[in-house]
Amino acid sequence: MTAATIDSARRALAAKFKAASIESADLDARILAGHALGLDLTGLISAAQRQLTPDESARLENFARRRLAGEPVARIVGEKEFWGLPLQLSSATLVPRPDTETVVELALESLRAGGSLDRPLRIADLGTGSGAILLALLSELPAAQGFGTDISDDALQTAAANAARARLSDRAAFIACDYAAGLTGPFDLIVSNPPYIRTADIVGLAAEVRNHDPRAALDGGADGLDAYRALIPQAAGLLAPGGLLVVEAGLGQSSAIEAFMTNAGLTLATAPKADLAGIPRAVAGHKLAR
Image 1: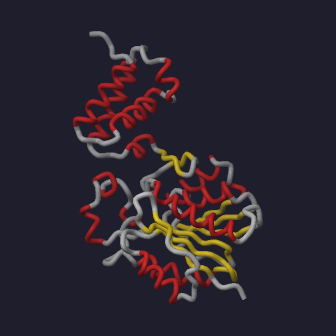
Image 2: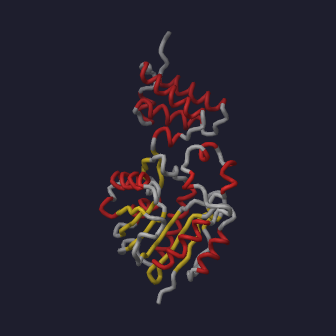
Image 3: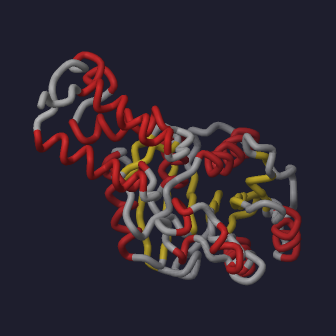
């Protein structure tokens, strides 16, 4: 029996994914084929008619089984791009999502309104996970120093590895603590994407999220707002005069988060920023300058 070529194997994989109603079937097949073979898109095209070795076929079949069982592509390949940065993942970190880039966008817009992005800044990311938000900001703020916190040592190791990969280790430090409990201010910017899914809603999440993202990074308590109740007062106390807090919000949560910020003494200087689906996704509060 003639071995499959790279092109025919990729097409067969895409067909299996389409039959399983996977929306991104073609893209998933290309990414998994490239990862199994160690080839980028150009390599896949140029070597399209090469026959797969038995080891390559077995590796690709294993990836296909995992994807058809509901495992996200990012988990299979072990990384995900965020803000143009390739980020390593671990079982202790969320897969970074495009919606979270809204937090980075709002933070940068607000900082830009206050002066040059080249100025020295001290920033913190509470519950940093893979380090996605912190490293995205540091990549845009060349004079900033950043601190990422997490209660998971595994997550902090992953974030530190991502900082090294992005050549940002000299400006990033990672601290094991609950949100801001281990930090000393003042900070010019504090950001967070905390757990905000209502406990009862977790069972209804997509299998890719429910079965593969860490529960601790999803579960926001009975109303989904427990993390905000804890971190917003902590952050408000650590902000410098004129400092900014930006957090990610779940569907229908922005008004409650704004109320928490107001109660903590912060001013709502800008409306929540919506993601591409129109959901208010990033909420910001300022500490008034003296």
